Image (cartoon, rainbow, N blue to C red):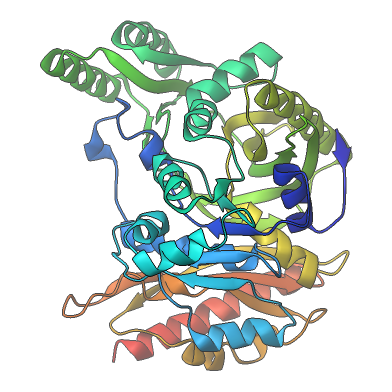
Length: 459
């Protein structure tokens, strides 16, 4: 395994296509796990939540991952003032390909499939570019077939196979990598045995967590602290199996272990089986839901060594199982400083993937950065110009300065619908400062300014 510092998008093209000369067509089809796991029997769906409109406008993250000469498919045209902000920072934007029509409950790929003019434009790129999706499902395979554009990644069946949490746990065990105590459940009988073991953990005061194999962003994750609740879920899953006659499951039961930090590290698997360690960041999470990343991660050299060795082992196994492309791994630091190097593998783009170009362009050596979302409650659409004015001196003016780049503006107004009343939005920002203390001060002030702007939009 090698560690390299060339621009990430160049490395990505070379790893996926064998050349840096062929452009990519980026598709930000976030939460593709819903397509992979749609027919998989996991936790009762009442435990899940939905936010399709917001998630589907995360497609705009691809705008700052793509390089000059690449193409990005979007559900709608970006705010022109946001594009002007990015260009003022010296960003060379990719070519934009906008869907003919957009449905908030469809992914960008599904919109593209319903856009004749866009399909024609994509077909015109056949042989000269390749599709790079957030993750490949049957939808992206259909888009490839209908346009003649090759997929830069592996087929949907391979993506699904290596992205389940059951796969992650199984190969980590085979590779001898440290994990929390736990069990995989691919049928009701395995669930019965796991529940019996979990009762022992609960009796000892050790919580457990049930996880859907294809859950994402805190969905399909249920922390259990007493045997009564465990019994309730156990019985519900049994009743479903009896009602449907389907005894299959796609679940994990694991001990909910103590931790002091969540981590995300990434490596890239090339078509030739090579594995390159990209980075490690501290993940900011809340109740299992991703909120952002801190950089640098603040790890010791020995802790980073554990992760780089783990990346090499995991990458080698993914390559052997037919996968190439980006892989992100969630990990944890225990209270004694030890590392759990595999909580789960995401063999697809990750939130941290979309920050790489921003780090390279706007984070000077030795500085600190924070990528995070700011929740906003809006009664009317907020224009980028209003956000620019609200941020004032904290909007980044040039590379090498302290400030924030607005990484995704489309999610700000994604929840609003005419006549439906106030809705939640999110602004995603990438903040850079010389020290962690300055970074946190800037973060607090930005949060206040954005909250005031949102309040003004409700009046």
